[in-house]
Amino acid sequence: TQFPSYFLLLPLLLIVILPCVERHVPKKTVCPKSRLERKTVKEEEEDRLPEEDRWGQLLPEEVLVSIFQMLVVQDGAVPFLCRVSRVCRLWNAAAATLTLWRKVAVNHCWIQPARGQTEKTSNRIKETFTWLAENRFSQLRDFTLCHWATSVDFALQTVSEFCPQLRSVHLSYCRGVTGSGLRSLGLRSRSLQRLNLQHSEVAIAVRLMRLSFQKGFCPDLELLEVNKKLDSKDTELSVCFQSLQKACPKLKAMRKRGESEAGFPLLDEFCIANTEYSYMTDQVLLDVLFGSTRLRVLDLRGSTRITTFVSLCLPELECLFWGQYFTKNIGFTSVKKNLQLLMEKWGPTLQQLDITNQPFTEADLQVALAFLAQVAEADTLLSLNLSGTKITAPVVERMTALGYLNLSSCRNLPRGVKKIYRSQEEIQELLANLH
Image (cartoon, rainbow, N blue to C red; front, side, top):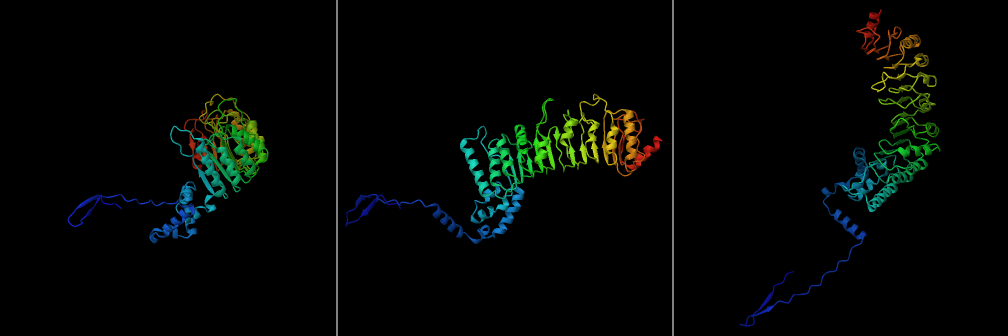
């Protein structure tokens, strides 16, 4: 309250002007309210809001959980659930529903440009991650970590400790992966079925995985995907496939980006297509596919060091792709022999055969294809690619179901014949012209 600077006193006819003495108003002391009192005041303020502004607080919790579930599928659990939990008590309770946290992807933490992560920031990240693991991740099944340059091992150790239902782990573009994190997964995550390390630094991790898997860790693992590039011709494969096969009998797919793949008892397709120098030899291939009795499709395109003798130790195939495409060694590889060994082993079951640019001799091709025509069932072989080979006359009279035949770039064939035939009618017309 403001007061005037003077008073007017009118005793009779005398006017006296006296200065105003400032009044002393004692200040009111405000005691800080406790956290519980502040929360009560906030709740009272929320209750005084108009009903049309309180629609979010009036929804049934199960309805709100269903809404959150749809948004989590679209946007992910983090950071969406962390943000909506700060809206009100009801939303916090709905966001704490453990079934919403079964699939979580955690991206990198934001840091100002040209500044490293301080120790204080790193500790806060670890505290937050630990709290989430303890209070939200008990039903976590699918975990993804993206673009983490530090604390990757800490994250793996934390989720393996507090997430007994963990089924899948994906590290995308992460750095600093060491053996402690992977060892923790092997020891504690006994239900782990998928481990994807693609696009992460795993040069050391692959060797450590071998040490972990050979002790029998992760017996339910079904998918293993790693990233490993071989930079020199003297580099050897760093994965012990025998240990993996023994420790992970349920493995159905292994993808090792680079030069090798792995086969296991349930494996039915194996692809190692390559356009550069191939390090895969007969012995390595047999070690990889040892015990893969269900193998149906074998893709060895670009594998110039593989010979026909591998057919003696592999199961019957339905599809064999062994062409040489866009390799630097076409025209310089040594002559290959004994194509008939492949036909004797796989001829009765083959549906697709591709031997593009393979350097077999004319006599070897003739004998092998003649034998294939004899042993193949009338409706078995559907596709045959002989492009770039030294074939002189295709032997396909008994292969009535053949619907694709590639004779392009076959120098020993007459003009007008060296092309691709994409139907049975075109192939029958070819046979008529050759006769």
